[in-house]
Image (cartoon, rainbow, N blue to C red; front, side):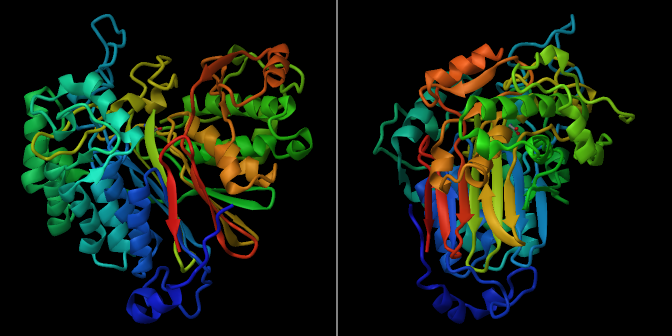
Length: 566
Ligand code: GLY
């Protein structure tokens, strides 16, 4: 099990004393609860290295997160982005916490039925492919907002490593080369100006230079937020929209605002769980599931036992049913969050749970109470040397988003509009169904499943965790947490372990093939469960703080994911 031991942070902090004393929330190096190491775990080794270099300069977890976000835009284009959005949860070394919502919004010209035909049926892939699928990106505003509030290094320092990577080129891994070839064959048709990504068939070891993207990142370096939402980049963005019927206007770009929100916070046994609230469903669903299973003896049932998998799946079904009815953008609908997270309500949700039989999804409905309603993302986990932690999940939605690259500006645009409910009950890409709470409205944020999460134990930082994976994000984070705190797996084993998922509808357990033994599958089938076997789910990147204060990474072997630190 890799452990990273501090060797130079004391020196760095002496040299960079002014940065150290500016670490939020206004603690000093001398009196802060300093961990003896710092770490970044992300989807790409080069992004993790860049994050580490920022931490080594004395930067804090937010500084490193910003640098990693821009680095992933270059080296992990299927999900790393400036043309998408995401969520950041931060826990400071004094135990205070916050979260940043840089989720995309629907353009002002968007409308409820924009993906329906004359007969009211959903037009296949209209919310997924091409210019009409794009939400107004939030990433650059989010990163700049995080920087203004908590950054301690210079903005330029956070951008420059990614600009250099884009301009000088970087060597493709096998997975990234395969990803680009997929993008070439599937999404080429959406671009009238051919992007660099399409210059050939890519192989592992090829060098990819992205000079258009390098120029855009340099504009962001020089003009901050305005380098993206105004001026040359915005001009190119709008020209791209106009070439192919996109709805986003100059005003949409100028008006975009990321938002600081209170995270959702709850207890699971003696662990405090700090996660993302609406417009992500991630934190609420995660806490609902944890509360529903809390009173059962999961440890005794055993890791990947039929009883444990059955219990978790049954709780997942109930949480996803609630998600479909109650969750959406809190700026547009009233969300009964307190009720949804109420212990008595959640105990009651399990009253028809049977430890022997699967509850049929059709017999599960969203919880009924008196309330009037007015496969691709990426995650990185960071702990800095001062004990601050950042958990960030960011996305273009599906791999390579809408497939549209802004002509001459070199960055991919999201297809996040598919995360809205195009029509009540009609499944989206992830098979998720929703209703009016998540209907399309101008300027509204689409409901997400992203679950960047931080856990503390005995008031101390314990775990930083998150993953990509659409609806499976919630259950992937859940299982990783349970693997460590209930089943005593190491962080790496917890991340590598096989995963399963139920989201109420469709009525099946999605499960990684070849990771579970056939006896377990047979036992679960006898209880009434059915299965959808898939290749792999999620790429969890997590850090746990060991008893001696050292940091243990879990970098998902399903991808190129890697940790770096000191
Ligand atoms: N686009 C996936 C999510 O936000 O859940």
